[in-house]
Amino acid sequence: MDNRILLSERELPKSWYNVVPDLPKPLEPPLNPATWQPADPSLLAAIFPMALIEQEVSAARTIPIPEPVLDILRLWRPTPLVRAFRLEQALGTPAKIFYKNESVSPAGSHKPNTSAAQAYYNRQAGIKRLATETGAGQWGSALALACNFFGLECMVYMVRVSYEQKPHRRTMMEAWGAKCIPSPSDQTNAGRKVLEEDPSSPGSLGIAISEAVEDAAGRQDTNYSLGSVLNYVLLHQTVIGQEAIEQLKRAGAFPDVVIGCCGGGSNFAGMAFPFVPLKAAGKDIRLIGVEPEACPTMTKGLYAYDFGDKSGMTPLLKMDTLGHDFIPPGIHAGGLRYHGMAPLVSLLHREGVIEAVSYPQLKCFEAAITFACSEGLIIAPETSHAVACVIDEARKAKEEGKEKTILFNLSGHGHFDMAAYDKYFAGELENYSYPEEKIHAALQHLPVMK
Image 1 (cartoon, rainbow, N blue to C red):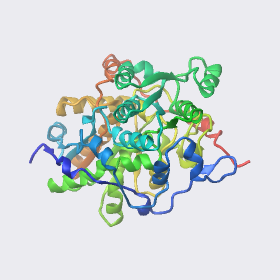
Image 2: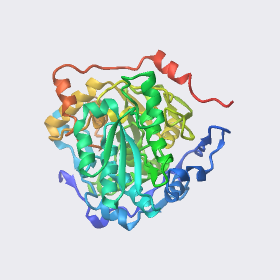
Image 3: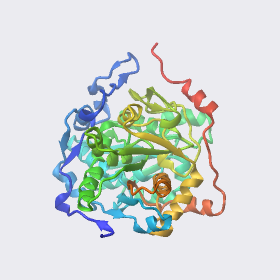
Image 4: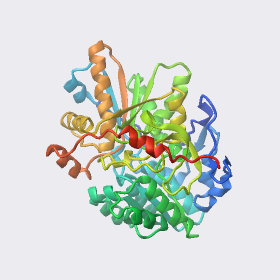
């Protein structure tokens, strides 16, 4: 059997898959925080193009991908599905392990799957500039790339701790013409308020979102762009799972387990959602989202309405949340440090369609080294969470003597994370399990109807 199962450019999916019609129960609507009534989609028109708003509320099972977006995606898609033979041998497992290598995109992760679409729709709407936030920098890099392709300016507010940990992510954004500054910043009211309370704040995705939304709302030529959480973002990522299903058919395989790391939910959903209708039709398959113990949104959070940002500028979303005031510790998986989980992922989690587990930082880096030494790829700290779970599942298969098939999403490479690996080798990293009392304190500030 080949190591890599490839599709031609002609076989790139022509439509996105929308999981909404296949949900076990209806998704709770976003609410207007002033009235606690369903938010009118038109309220989002100040910061989003109408085409994306329509996708956000769509119940259509498939949505065609515009040809200009397909032209961009063809630069690296379809991505390879790889049989991890050497990892299997290293673990001595009877399990078959496959991974979808999303690190081959120009930005090095799955994020351009949605940034290309978002830049296109904003350009079609006459927008000249996009503002966004980024954690580890993968989303900021992807949006910078897409804005460059479609002739838009790009402003990125990068969580300060990651801005300092990963300076070359900023360099990458600037190479594609974007501007990137650390958040909290003195450029917005939201940022200045945080700095007044804590001048040394490490920042959070919630804070950076507040800054980017404020930026976009204050300029007519600017819209806001988000790299995860919202329905349309997860929709755009489903090219991953659609390709994987076709590639597995050619390999004569079907997964018993599908695994992805979870921060806001986009890369996990992109891989797992196309399998949801197959599971509902009776296929015996587990879908596992892996998050850090330092930011245990699904495993320790509440399923409740909350803001998507620190300042309370967004509509209220029903999701697994640690509270919008949650400030995560500066673990190196910066893309997994968000206080909330995508509403679609949260609903499927609460309905038992998907499972959620959390892993400590050191175990994830150990897994990353095992993967690097067997498969040769140095992966992002975010991806290492998925790999740690894969290794556990493969070892269980060995203990049980079962020939299970494991599929996971390699969501990004770790080429800009060498400082994190340096600290791991020097013994300077430590596990961090977020204290129950701090989670309880953050959840005390969930919005309530007045």
